[in-house]
Image (cartoon, rainbow, N blue to C red):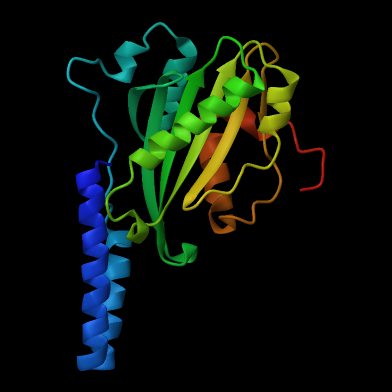
Length: 235
């Protein structure tokens, strides 16, 4: 988000809070309740963020990644699961990005924006894995709208695929992800040499309400993730 948009968002927050404060002093209580409900619920119910279209002159992921059978399969599964799919260039290289958003009353009437990134790495050390996850998190953070505090949370599934995965990277993948403000990070490794998937399989206290829905999304896009290596330590 640009500095101009960030400034606009800050001004909007201040004006909204000031307006509610004024109404609270001079208006009836029911009007305060209505305003607060509108400020919170409208952005939750109406999606306000969308995946960007590929830059001008760049082909769609279907043509840009043609010739890669796995990429074609992942794109198909992402679309079948309700994602908008595009290809982006990250600091760690090209990535397939799927995006979908859902509102649920059982999530305390909130909206969740889910981004799924698939990244290839010829050799995957723990340093490279951490870099891919950090880059994916930065990308998702940059996609937030100016009023993201009112627009629900975001989750990012970062799948790094490699035929040469270090034991340290595998250990990192099955460890509990770090907690981040308004961002649920779900990193996983797809080891093409052994046809195994490594990801954290323990309980998630942070964002527990979304767990079952997120697990279903991961299983739909990465079927082998259901047989992911479990955590062999207490979380």
